[in-house]
Length: 261
Image 1 (cartoon, helix red, strand yellow):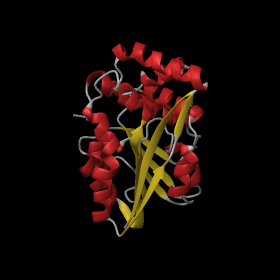
Image 2 (cartoon, helix red, strand yellow):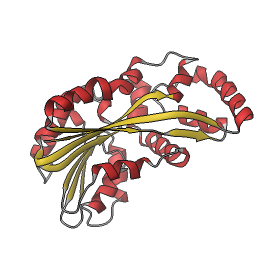
Image 3 (cartoon, helix red, strand yellow):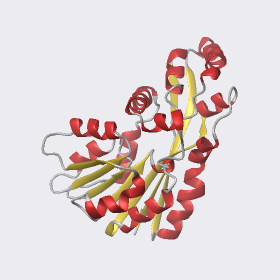
Image 4 (cartoon, one colour):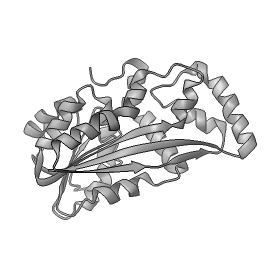
């Protein structure tokens, strides 16, 4: 099993087109700049070696590649070969990014046999680790690969999530979605408190404001909890909200935990 999803839902996890559309809508209509917020807290410095687990098409890896210069590196992996190829096309010639398409469950083998760099100042995963059925073992490997004084950071979605709540009014949302939203408090927090000398918790507060129902449904179609039968009643409710307030808003928060060894 590659992810906690299967079938069409797993394709929405892995598919590059789905990822790119989610990133585009989030970036355009979010109340908070996630990238700036995350990078400020990760504080990557020149010369550092970074491990990016679940790198997608490079949302974090590419900025990291600039931050670590001169002298640093980025080792990145993702399950989607298409996303990794897109990342490689986007990085500058001579970039410090080494990207591999592979299941994160094989991360120990990748570090041992594929990546040039073996130890890291930062091992991070954003919007990815909760998809893996072997998330705890992946965390163990990330932690073991840190240099003395290194840090591990994981970002995950968190409740409340307004689009999930909207969909749940008209269809059965898979338990895996609620598992993802609870991942920070139920899995990450206890693991980090047990495994690291010092732990930081950060809550990402964010509201998505979409100006028309088409955009709301477009985003919904990219999600792991999409159900075509829910579109019509969702559209009606969303349009009613837009008619009344000019925009449809929903909360979309997140949780970041950073552990220092």
